[in-house]
Image (cartoon, protein in one colour):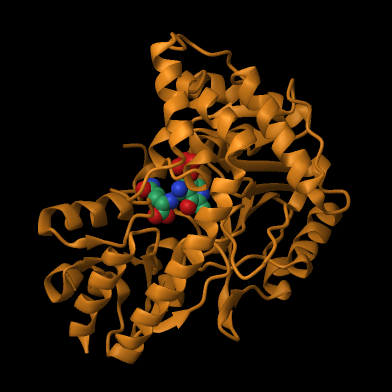
Length: 383
Ligand code: PMP
Ligand code: GLN
C-alpha cells in the first residue's frame, strides 16, 4: 500500500457493522435506514431494469437525472444550474467528493475540514497528496460550532478549498447563515473553493432551514455543491449522487470521474430522477418521522445516562459517555455488544486530534421504533 494511504485501515463503519453482524447486536452504528424508499420509485427502478436501461449511460449522467437535479435546486433554493454542463452524476457523494478533491488539489495544497469530519474526506485528501487542516467543532450551548478565529487561523498560502458538510455528520449541526457567511467571506477573500457535502439537505428538524453555500453572495461561482439520493430517498445502496458547479469546475471533476468509474448505474438514475420530481412529499413524511425518532432515541439515551446533543439535522445523535463513567468511545464501542448488545460509532475516529472527541459516541436513529426501543432498553444496562 502506498505510504500516503497507510494510515487508512478498514473503515469504522465496516468494523462496527461487522461487529453487529457477528454478535447479533442492534446496529445503531452505520447510518442506513431499515425501511425502504417510496414504492413508486422502487418500481421505477425495477421497470428501468426490465425495460432495458442496462447499458452505459452517458458520462455526465442521464439527461433525465441532470434535468431533475437542476429543477430541484431551482425550486428549493432558487439556484440555476444548466443541466448540460453544470450538473454531473456520480457514484454517490463519495465519488463526487473524491473526484472533486482529486481534480482541484495539487500535491501539497491544503484543504480545510471541520472536525469531526466524515471519514472519506481524509482519504480523498490523502489520495490527492493534499494536506488537511482541521478546524474543530466544539459543543457550545448544546450544539457543535466552530470559532471563526480558528477558521481564519487555518488558512495559509497553500489553502485551496474548504470542505463544508451541513447538515453535519456526526454532530447533527446545521450551519446557520451567520456561520456560512463567515466561511463564504473567507472563501472570497482568499480565493478558495467551497466543496459542500449536502447529502442530508432534506433531513432538518424543528423548522431549521438548510442553506446551500452556493446561495450566498459570490459563492455560486466558487462552490462545488454535492448531494446524493441515499439519505433523501432511503436508498443508501443505490450510490447515486451528483455535483452542481460552474461549467469549468464540472469539466475538471468530470475529467477525473471518467477514469474512476466513467459513469454511474443507469436504472437508479432514472428512478432518482422520478423521485426528485414526484416524491418530495414522501421525503417530508420521512423527515417528520425522523424528527420523532430523534426524540425517541434522545430521550432513551438520556434516560440510560448519556449526555445527548440534540441534532438539528442528519439521522445521528452525538452523545457524551462520561456521565456513565466511560472515557474512551472507541473502547466502549468495541465492548458495547458484550455490555449491551448494541453497536454505535466512536466519534474520535473522525478527528485529526482524537483527544478532542475521545468521549463522544454516535447513534443512528433511522430505524424502526421497536428497534430504537429495544436498543434503549438494552443500553439501560450500562448504568
Ligand atoms: N457525506 C456524508 C456526510 C455522509 O454521511 C455520507 C454517508 N452516507 C456520504 C457523504 C456518502 O454518501 P453516498 O452514499 O452518496 O456516497
Ligand atoms: N454515511 C453513513 C454513516 O455515516 C455510512 C457510511 C459508510 O458506510 N461508509 O454512518
